[in-house]
Length: 359
Image (cartoon, rainbow, N blue to C red; front, side, top):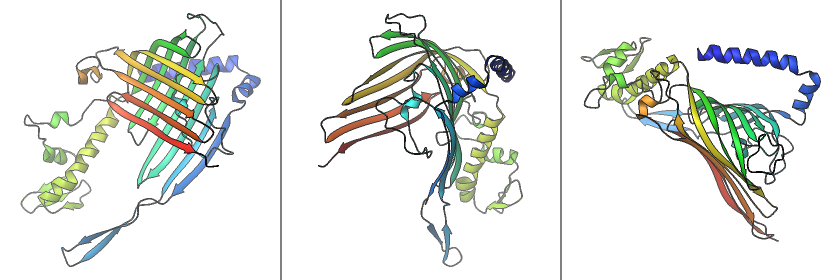
């Protein structure tokens, strides 16, 4: 039902856009945007020699293939005052924490569409970050202004953190002084049913698990008398209980868990969101901070609702901080970072340091 609704909304949006926008509108939308594509690579972990004395001394060398990162993207985002002017080229390694902010520097539409195909330490994964952000501000000087709101559509996939979701939020903002604004609204997230554990049905009362029965169900065969164990393809994978339990079973559990996760439909979560944005900049010091808290989530009573795994409500939140100060012509400090916690999953980035110019 959710998929049908999304498809219907996309069709309606496409029809509306086709009727409303002409070529000139598209050109204006793309004006000052940047399309980029880049490949980065480098040496990964060094080769490791594994020694064995089972049948005389033997050596096996484990090699890790080189790391790489292929990036392709399209972005149109106004730089904040503290951000350095872009390099001659976008190379896919840029890390702009301000992209996670709820409100952009300028009013109107900003967007980012970026896909990264990566291999790190022999593991392949994909990252995606797409968003369209709209900030409205009619210049009203009062605390309560009618045309003062923020909309954001975002899709995030972080392969390293194992998180993937689509989020849409609409927020009304209240100005509190020149630099601070509060916001309140609704957010809607579409994601796999985080909290679901496929191994729960195999758990025993003593906390152990029927791992051998699970392996047999998945197509493995075991001969406990001869201590031989075969995978579903008929290949010998273990010749002892120790190898079976220490090497094969963990892989069986991981494959089973991933298979069950892939079988589940996505769930949609509607939540109340409150937050703030603060931005103050001068050439000697600057502070940009933002945060969002989701204290209440609608329970639709579905089988895989996250409410079932936490016995009620929970808190999801995210935020970011960018601070810098130039103490004098020689010395400066900076702190930057962002943090997210959704469905008890955490992912974050940060950096801090100092610069000292020697005359």
